[in-house]
Image (cartoon, rainbow, N blue to C red):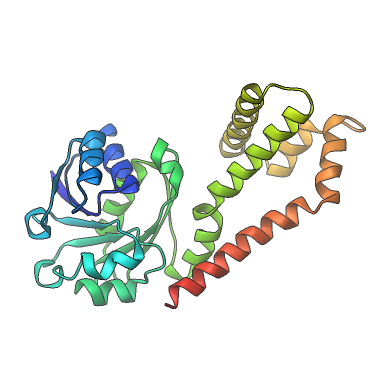
Length: 263
């Protein structure tokens, strides 16, 4: 059984740890976090032990960095002499593999961009391994993040685009669900019914997109009858620049991710 030490025991760390337990993935779980509230939540989610001192928690083959970017340097300042040959995984937004190597003292690194649906086991995580990393290490990282959803392996140069799409995307989708529900309320539905209808419709359409072998455009056209209700609604979306607006949201978020990575 491999052991994994989470540096930072916040919500995402707890979600990943809980996923490992739920999937019976075969990892011993421990964490380091000076926050008592974070420790209680982490232990409640996965049963892993949380230490208040980093040295006590580091008896593990894998270290997963799960702190806010502004707290990273302080959180890992004791790490370089203790890292040995441990595999380091990082979900710290905007911090490059080069910077992570400088801070931790190792080149055995995988940088990951997960997203918040990991909290319910439906995340999308993209792994960016350091140059020369072994397939075994990449597969270990893949196994860990598959416990909370789907995984892709991409180059680090694409992570800003990933951040704009799947990292920021849940907020865009939730905005869309809220807008669908608002439209339903305006058309006469009670708020609670409108929210459920909107959320399930988006969930079902996403599941259809994932599981069908047909192109997205063909699936959309299945709903559109000539001169019908859906064609009228799609015309309204087109008139108001819906597709361009969503694409621009992704692009702007990706651009901001690149800006933040320079600091």
